[in-house]
Structures are given as C-alpha cells and as structure tokens.
Length: 354
Image (cartoon, rainbow, N blue to C red):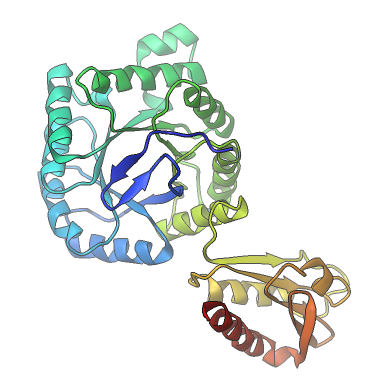
C-alpha cells in the first residue's frame, strides 16, 4: 500500500497524496543554449517525462528558464548549488521547483531569502542530500556513510526551511548504493510525510544503471515509498524516461503504453525471435495506449502462456502465428510476419478507441 504523503503542486502537476507517481529526468544540454535545451525537453515530453530538471550554473542559465518555459508543457526544476542568488533568480524567472542543499547554499540569512522568494511565488523546494557530501560531524558520529546519517542530514536541512514557515518540501536522498538507498528511504519515510523523490544516483551506463535503478526504485515503489522517480543513467536522458516508465508499468503503477512480454528462446525456436522482438519493441515504444503485446518463440507454449496479451506472435518453422487473447488469428510467412503483425496491432488500437 502506497504511503500517503503531503500533496504538493509543481507547475501544472501535483505530486504526493493520491496523485500518480511522476517520472523525472534532467537535461544534459547547456541551459544557456535555449534552443537546444527546449528541443531536448520536447523530446523528453514526447517520451513521457512528467518533470524536467535543468542545471543552473550562472545568472544567464537562471534567466534562460523564462524563455524555455514558453515552449514546454511540463514543470521545470532549477538545480542549484552553493549560490543562493541563483535560486532566487531561477524562481523569479519561472522555475516551478528548485532543488537545493540548504547546507551548502550559505548561512541562514541566505536560506531565509530563498524561502521568502519561494513562498512569494508558490514554488516548492526539493532538499537533496548527497551521501558523498555529508557533514563531517555526521560522518564522525556514525563512523562513515550510513542510512541513519543520511536521514539525519536530510532532517537537519528540512528543519532549516521549516524554521521559516516553509513546508512545500520534497526530499531526495542521493546515493549510488542500492542497499543504502533502500534503507535510507525506508527510514525517512517513517519520520516525515513530505513527498519523496526516489532514485539511485550515478547508477551507471544504460546496462548497469538500468539494473541498479530497477532494483532500487522498484523495491521502494513496491513498499509504497516514492512520489517522483528519476532513473540516473550515463547516456541519453530519453532512456531514463523509458526505463522509469517501464519500472512503473512492471509494478502496475502506470496503465499507459505498451507492455511487451517475450520468451527467452530455446531449441524449439525456428524463427529469428530476438531480432523480431527488438523490432516490435522499437516500432511500438511511442504508443500511449495501454496494450499488452507478446512475442513468443513457438506455437507449443506461445498462445497459452501469453493468453493475457491483447495481441501476439508465436513462431514456427519459417512462419508465425498471430494470436489475440490466446486464440490463433492467422498464420503468416516469416518474411511478412512483422508487417502483418503491425497491421493487426493497428486494428487492435483502433478497436480500443471505439
């Protein structure tokens, strides 16, 4: 059962409460290059990104937010380090949320100035705590990096905002260790009702990062913890969004888009199933309707094992069966199988919209 957290508005969406879990990503463009940043955000929107974060390195980047916002349809989060003036400038230029670590933004007088600007403009603040930059006192207290230390640091930073009457807070606990990530979020979820932004930071390349993120984020979501997620990959941020959405779909938390199931192949497989499954995945990845597709290696187990699929393929010797809800619909030669399948899939999609 999902943990009930405080509902917070970020631009045109709400997180926490009973709202859907939002998928977030971050641009890897220079924010000052407005055109390139807008183009990347639009691509991310089309891939299903719900919230986008941009790096704000200087005043020019903070001011660029105003122009970027005119061309996009999802909330934009300004990522700030060290300089409180950048946080205020980003807010004044329309950032829908800012991400800071209050401990490195300056003294309490600087924090109060940021809080006042956020209050005046209805902008929430994400408190981001990084395991790699914990305070020396906390490291000494716990003998190194621990979940208890990470949570204590987060609560200490949250209290700095609460001290000035600010409560539109989102919390993230950044660590590259899957077990440490899980334990830290489990611990803080018992102590606060603020929305939690969940992810395994610096997870790695598309291969290793996807696995770490799926285990870390997926485990927490299964426990009911998490209101927004970000898959952190060294690569194209569109892949972060696709992986994030797939994690949600796998847990039944997203009822939109294609769910593809395919068998691992075995000695009974007589067609090039691996290539076929990849092509089906590529051709269907941008479909927004909720449809389950199966690509199975043989007719022995295919239709039966994948009877819950709306439509599927079961391979044969140089041919394949196209089936719907476990019942064989037609037999097609292998060289025409993909085209015929896509034609039947379009019919299924059309039927579902009637």
